[in-house]
Image (cartoon, rainbow, N blue to C red; front, side, top):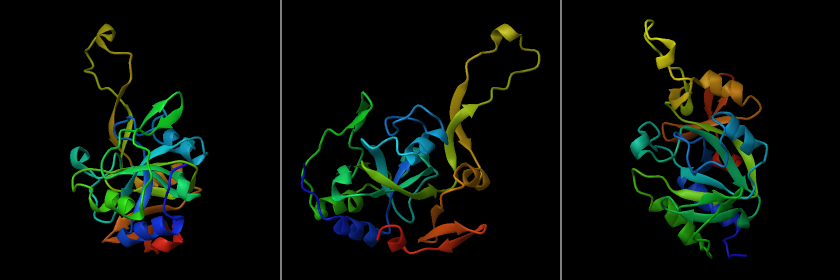
Length: 221
């Protein structure tokens, strides 16, 4: 067992930056997900609790970039906000991609070590402006759903062929790619959970079809 700060100290770091721990539906899919499922089934598996060996997450902050996928501060736009049950829930943390991956259904972290509260804070404060960091969270609890515009997901896309193209030239294989969905579709997919985002530098939650300010401490007490 590695040495970790108290859970309250980790929460204080998150509160200092108004940061959330989010496991994103990868856009595109990659090592950041335990599951082959596409959105929203990948996140539903997380919500069901089927990834307690560890999930690749990022800490996201007000003002982060989610629109330009080549220089975004996360690996997607929509994800599950996670809490930690104990201070050991944080298995690894880095200011950039830590290189965690799946082996035989278990998330492997190559740089597991003792961590101080300063080292954990540095994974947020030293993150590059056009990159994402990585926290690996195990033994988690689900707080809600995070959704940032432009609401990109990785999906199966329809292929459009000219009407006069013969059938033998049309591919039978599905094509995956980036699709944009609506807030209403996100709400329908996760109707049992609150949906959060950042707006004008603040954390907000969706209530009665509007966004309302919410205290960070209500998520991480």
